[in-house]
Image 1 (spheres, one colour):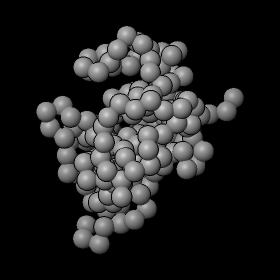
Image 2 (cartoon, one colour):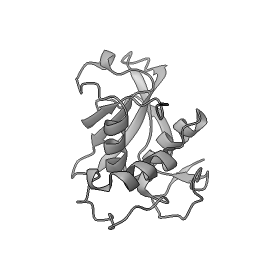
Image 3 (cartoon, helix red, strand yellow):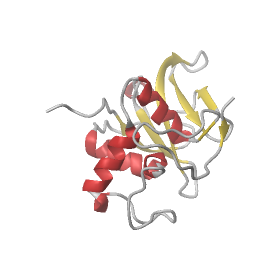
Image 4 (cartoon, one colour):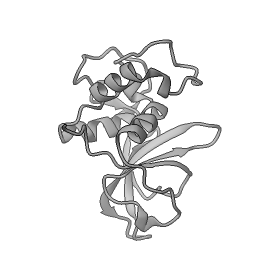
Length: 162
């Protein structure tokens, strides 16, 4: 079982990950992309190195420089990255606008950000695609698309080749 653990951990770069038995919501996204050959640790770090001023500076944890151990594990950084490098479909209250592979961010209240990924499994109760996320009880597949205020809707297919 994976337990929720937001602790700062030094990890290898590139291709690093926190211990497999730990993680937070962003680690679910990082691991999903890594499974299809996309290293968000490397991609986010490189984009932040080149465009540091584009990334949020208001968060209490932000230092004056990039940190490949943690930058990709912060929801606000992923929001900027996916917005810069991917697509941003409209945020709507229509479940059919959210497709498997889409990334959704929320404000859980009190400006607490959260992220999940839409999966190809539908809820028997609502018929909506479900979300893989980790909100403190380990990774779950749940019908939570409209459980909180949606703050972002993204599609990202990996770095584009030139």
